Length: 336
Ligand SMILES: [Zn+2]
Image (cartoon, rainbow, N blue to C red):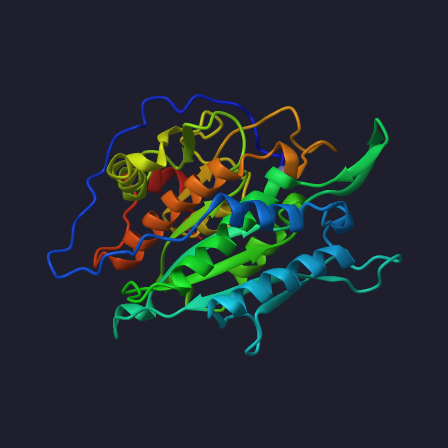
């Protein structure tokens, strides 16, 4: 998560529920996703390892992270949905004397839907893989490992890709798995994707963002976007229907009626895409050298990811598209 726009504010009385329409036609049922704490821990440890040197945008280590994501997408059976038949979408960075004409990677994978018509619509799952690189040394440690921020959310997207890839029956809509970089420099990768979408933008029906999902109390997760669209009512229903996840859901106190520009849902939301953002809150290691893999809670991250799995499944399966609340749309969607 990027620090700009992170001012704490109470959301007020916007927590109105929106009914989520159930389709009358026969629906496929999601198989139990094989999303385990071990899987989340493995991905977090790889991405947040000291050898990744904090995955700065740009850096050779960010390229290593992108290659890792690409390999998992390929193994999960996702199709490449970046530029020119590749998994990567490259975006330009400001040229500098030190690095010449730099660029940075987004990694984009596609799982086609089963419905001949609705497969032309997309649910986007996004997380950022970059972090802050090397910073000021504190107690002999200068690497900003970014384990919670955001190896955890990236691990979640990788686990979702594997879980959806294994489903015998796919949901109706297609799912676009988008792992971006440049978030910590102002959401550069997600802004670029929105300006240069690799699928028709108006056919993106909704978005799920995972950014910092592995810390704090084990029994709850914040929903940024609470009460703003039908998606938050959907997630509340799914959390209640899956008590085995042990997750209560509530509004993110850092959210506001006008969504702060603090993570990768924002460029999409401004262009009208209803979203939900799973977030487990700030902590003393935020953006410091101690955001280490050992301090994450992979069990919690796996349960948040399973809740995200059911959410994405329903968004991709329901014949009805997620809908903004009227007031939230007025405040958050830019008329262009
Ligand atoms: Zn951050």
